[in-house]
Length: 215
Image (cartoon, rainbow, N blue to C red; front, side, top):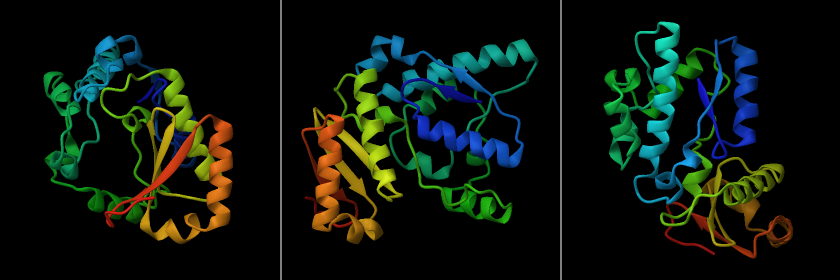
């Protein structure tokens, strides 16, 4: 099951639909309505709790209706190393965590996915669009759409691993170190600036992880 809401990008939905078509896995989309919750939109540090609580409420209802004994989700060992309020919601709903129980981390999952021939084994990590907004910035459909538009631009320009984080109308672009040579040429900078301005951003700055530097 995959939850559809304004925080789930059209790109991710299209990629998932391709995966389902390639593998034949049984899959359904369900709608969630976390955006109707003021506590979610307030975007405090526990935003993910309200998102997962909404999701598990929906899945619990479906499980009861269809006679399933349990709900499971994909949390893994690496996800326990940082602050994840969604884990609290999972515990409250008694959601199973088979990857975590097996002590599997992301590298283990990628290795087994490659062995199984899954096309997503090396897919860049992704997170919901709401994660691109700083805590305290209200989550709105308009802001999420702006982030999605910015990330679509970078994808169209040939980049693979990145984030566009929104600070008012400033785009803070995080990009993988190996893609910096492509990103940092004057020509590419001009193209990105023009495309982002047209999309509604006022300016952008680069951030790349592991160097402590930015522009």
